[in-house]
Amino acid sequence: MDGTVLTEDDVVARIRPRRTITGMSAVLLPFTVDGEIEWPAVEAHIARTRAAGLVPAVNMDTGYVQLLDDATKARVLDLAAEVTGGDFVAGAHVADEAGAPHDPGAYARAAAAIVERGGTPVVFPSHGLNALDDEGWVTALARFGAEVDRFIGFELGAMFVPYGRIYSLDAYRGLLGIPSCIGAKHSSLDRVREWERLAVRDQVRPDFLVLTGNDLAIDMVTYGSDYLLGLSTFAPEAFAARDRMWAAGDPRFHELNDLLQHLGQITFRAPVPAYRHDAAVFFTLRGWASSDTTPPGVPRRPDSDRDLLADVLARLEAWDLGAETSP
Image 1: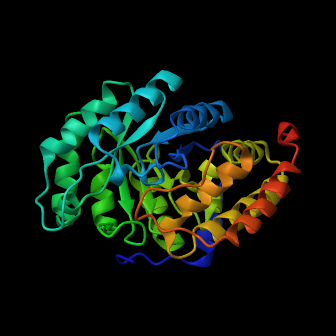
Image 2: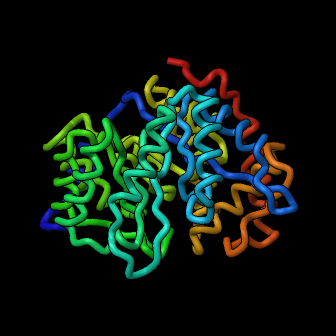
């Protein structure tokens, strides 16, 4: 824990009632039964996410960015720019192999493709970047940040991708020292590590966004985190309603949050990357996609998940999300 010791009192003291939550939602990339990207469904979901009040996040793990070629990533960016007018974030992804050196030029090109469309880059991990030591990682991101007006950092655990890495708290402090870095997604699935980052944020740079990627603890928003989640792609309207409940002091926040967390516990169980198949199944149940097809190599869930997901959907549909902001 990098020398930081949190007590229960510290954790309780972190709760921030009635705060406005910034929500960013990673957009699933649906596929047809023939294995082709279902582009109308992609466009509709970007629009749906924005209409709900969340910031669409494209070309992330939820959008299979690791499996996309450059032309496809560019088409996703074009759709995001067209639908949102530039109010989106996107993974600046560099495809490399184990043992490859860090490639600053490739990251700069990936960022430029996002920035020229009005979006904000999220520095997606790679073998080369994550092979650097803590100091090298901060230096590499500072160099990246010198080329753009704003960007989002990214700590991604190895349960999501084999080249994932969570950095030391000292490295995180270094990240907060980069002026153009407006926040960082933290996907360790570890509450304590995230609480530690919130404490450092409050000490060093209060305006910095600690964007939880903990789909197993989505109540981290009550402690001061904002979010960039894959889970929210299942129901962006419900996440946005939940967020408004918290800002309004509506105690129904907790009941809706419990249901959404139940969904997260189902879908983000091991193997974690199979959550994307659950999302595809959920999309078909909602009429948002024509099939639950996933790209080759993506782990899939058993057929029994469909009944579990249908139950959650029925319970979500019973909510009157238009009346969520009662005082």
